[in-house]
Length: 101
Length: 453
View 1 (spheres, rainbow over the protein chains, first blue to last red):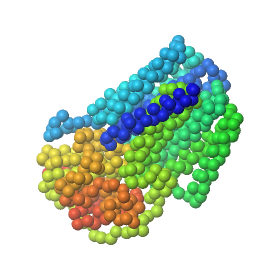
View 2: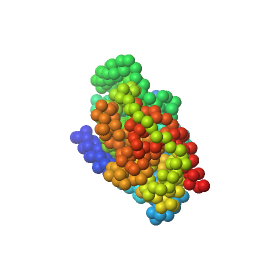
View 3: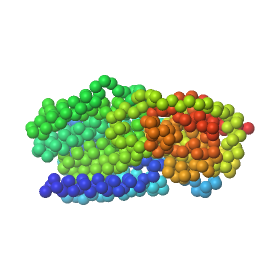
View 4: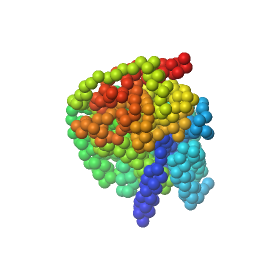
């Protein structure tokens, strides 16, 4: 039952992902990609549990978990900040004839 | 300390924030808010995880979070926007690598058959993402040659590795253990596959590779979520995986090639035999100025060459000068121009070009015959009429920006050399085409000084 439940969530999330992304204009492809990539850094949650969990006592496991936390944190922090930096560049002129800059 | 029920309830909130964030990211006006919402979701998920009673070793966690945050902040602030493709590649790779490690650690607590299968999936996808992104980074930052690297027996080696991967995975799942030799073999093979599958892919096909690796990093997180039985990883990973696949598909369609063709053909490695003969018409900046000055509508068509020459700022300056003279100025952007999806859009946004002037291929093509001057800057294959006319051409069928239907075409280029695909470009020899030879940035600057005189 548990596996069926997880599979259901998985399938629904995939369909939702398809629906959400199919309408993005080409202009936003890069920020969308890096923003989505930051979301994939959610593996940080798993990394935190792996590095600090009471159920894991093996030394190798702690090191692997620590590495995972560093990798995932770079992914999350860097990913969101760089996406925000890029999105901050996209501007629209208030009037079509007005000179921007 | 929180019970599992409250933790899961907060994960649901985080998932909703991710979904809303992605939805808002799809419109220029709300995109920044969307990204913030998504970041808020991440923060909520991380905080609630830290508050769960499972965390014991705080020192390691805090040190690792601090190291990662410092690197992330510095990278996102200091890296130039022209280096964005390789930066995205690095972030993809780290996400994939992290998921691989997370899945591996899961084995120390649980060696069920189902967990072992999920771990194998996550390790394979994460390993390929990690190593493949490393190679993509190398190619994009010119540490490695950007042309396709092909060697004898490559397909045979890949097939053999893939077969070995399947055998090792089966043996591992039959007897799962965190320090199983079969697991080590799986990790090694996955890393090698990541390297070997990205090496043969050339620079101009990088938009496909980057978006595919983006999808993989999501799928690796999703598989890691299955391994540690964590719903937020499964949902978010699947969302990103699906988003990446959609983007990959858009990129492939924009080149009229299948994903398999992009990944395995080593496209661009061989020079095409089909030669185009003719006489090109060079033009000086002075004469080009006279034509531009008389034009009512001008569209700029940028390609990777604009990024290399760092010409986006002068292009915008020229565009603004033309606009103040009443010329209608637009920018026509091919979906695969550059080295990642939307590459040209980001560079032009950096140069303060308003996003409503950036037109997609399907919007500009019907209007192209009304455009007085189309200025091609460092683009080649995406404006090559052979894609429309020459059935024997390797790029035949690829949708292009039909600059040849504009009244006059300026091509800013160093020489008459062929583009990435190795296909000669008959556009250069058309009667309505004028070649402005030289470095794109210098040519545009020369035009600007003509306007200012």
